[in-house]
Length: 171
Image (tube, rainbow, N blue to C red; front, side, top):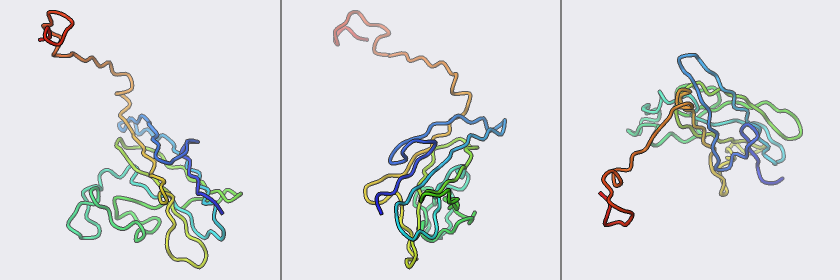
């Protein structure tokens, strides 16, 4: 029994970010492999919980509270694996031995997403969340592929008509 460990493509998932480039028109699919080690005894169920590729569902109000789920999502404990009716979705992980579980999801839509893991232990119906006890969700940023090769220039308007190097000499 110890601290849970979650990695995404080999990177510790505690308050970190994975950046990928996706061309939606070409149906790109960039794999994200999550490995979760709950470091708990008697684990009965392990899942990834994320809004990856679900940006089109951000305006849903699945729990009927009058607030879009992209602003205030429903209680994650009420969302079961495979339920496709919410902004967030739970995905069952595969036991790979040694107390670790794995799942690969593909980033197919551009956007900014959150990802965490959860598990249950025998005798307890409540979820234990990776992102508790001071740990934070992992961010996935899927950027359009064409942005990877973009050239961007900045023009500082304060220097266009500068007459010298001091603040008073600036335009």
